[in-house]
Image (cartoon, rainbow, N blue to C red; front, side):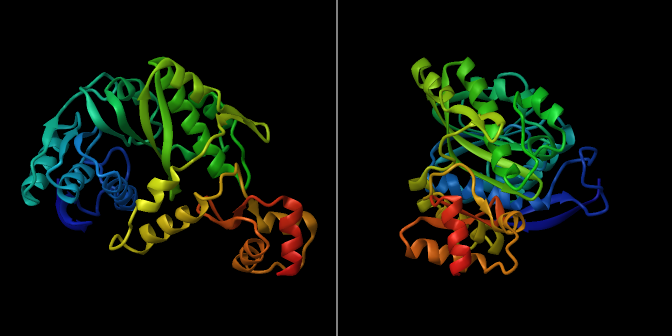
Length: 339
């Protein structure tokens, strides 16, 4: 396997060189597009002042594991796990290159693999097969991070597959990213509830080809029951999570400086929309088409008008043509005319 060295965050990584096709057959999987995903995990755990045991259950090159250990410091103990022997060799090289200590293991990610305070489930495709083991391996008050890359299912391209895997009906419209991530949350929470673990979302984002959710775990049947009571339907989609998508206080603490423009912009946008506790948003292009509005103002102009009249309003990272607001559709249409 031919390799090259790349810089990511505060670490250097030995990874397969660019001649390899980016798919599951890659000798050791490394996706540079997922840098933002790994950035957020570092930023979030820093904001939580995380101390304890962490595991990346499908660590591949060890990129996330090395970054967590290097960028979070001595308070974190990191396990990098992968069944692929070539991946484990590369993890060791990357640990040495960055002068960090990793626990490197080869456990089956579909079976209970120890006890941890932070578990990262970042597979190629759906995370569903790994959820049981992850929940059973998570300590009380721990953090579970889950990535889904099968967005074509969650966003409604293949509704039958979404129902088989996630037990829900998706939407195929301007709301599909938010609805998809709420369906993913619902599924993870159902698995947690089987083991009397309540999983409350504390952060999420949709970026590029994937969805990503972070949960705080609290043990207790009553808590798990309370989570399930917040599942329901929205515009015929669901069942899905109807509750808050972000812990607003946590988001305020998340500092994305020095992580690059894409990461900084994502965090900034989410900080604004996390203050608005609504389900869904208004796509101005869709409204203009439906209402036959010929001259659509700039999104920021509409946002400023709404705020000036006492409403909450911001862009949403789920759809850059849309506004998240506690105003009604009627109000939004009125301010489109005024902008």
